[in-house]
Amino acid sequence: MPALELKLGSIPLKIQGSFLLMALLLGLNERDPAKLALWVAIVLVSVIIHELGHALVGKAFGLTPRIELHGMGGLTFFNGGRAEMSTGKSIAISLAGPFAGFVFAFVVVATQVGGFHPIHPLAREAVRLLLWVNVGWGVFNLLPMLPLDGGNVLRSIASAITKPHGEKIARVLSIVVAAGIALLAVQYKQWWVLYLGVLYGFQNVQGLRQAGQLRVDQTLADAIERGYAALDRREHKEVAAVLKPALETQASPELRQVGLRIYVVALLREGEWSEVMDVVERERRVIGSEDLGRFSQAMRELGRDKEAERIDELVKAPAPLSEFRA
Figure 1 (spheres, rainbow, N blue to C red):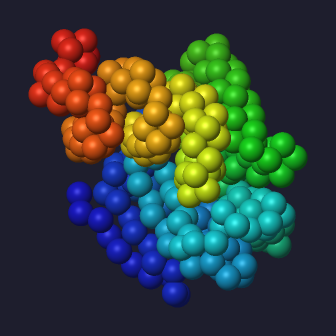
Figure 2: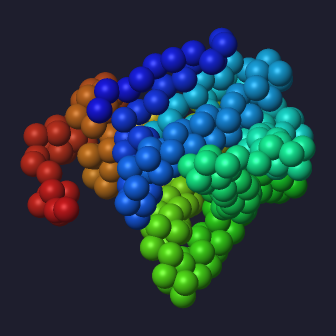
């Protein structure tokens, strides 16, 4: 299905075909075509109202929002700035979505209290569904589990209190909540809820791994920055002291390549030939043939022809079979 692109005032709205398909699948237990169409329409309107809550509050804080509805619900994107916002503003943006739905539900209830009582069965069904979707889904969205709004609030608070550990804490708690939801869903035979619990649990496990990788990469990035500064000061021993422990972590290959380049240059300037060759032998695939060629040339210029020849052999040698194993 092609996507439908609209504008709600100045806010772009994109509705993917997968969103309508998801809404249709959720209502398939309804045999009446009119009621099924009503369900899809109410889900569409309610999710738009939810995302508008996020968008309008973000816009009030100076951000530029856009909304996209997709197969897993809706998402409001902001062009720059939210990551740098205060904890309070970030929490306000997160809570604005569910509370927009609560306000909408309150308006529906208020019309009932005010004397408006629909007579047609389809109209009464519309009122029931509006309350269920906006209140029920709104409460579910407040659960402290990423990527739900309650999970984003949890992450904002945890990051404000524990600084660098906020993401990890939020992910771990989200996994616990997801597991609890999955167990309850099995007990009450709510298979769609079970699917969400498993999906969100998996997403948070992946997010936890990525957060750990980011911390490792940041450690090496900081070491590289200090290593560059020490290299400029010709403090080669300090370069080795700073970089060696950081290079022993499982940082990303791109960062390790940069760190190894600085580390080997410092070792060459210190005349640590044995250590240079140990590093080159061990890390030749990360270092890459281009830098290996430079190190070979440097060795020749320093009168270390034997080591230069060995590096040339490493450049030409095929990768070990273990590197091709899945």
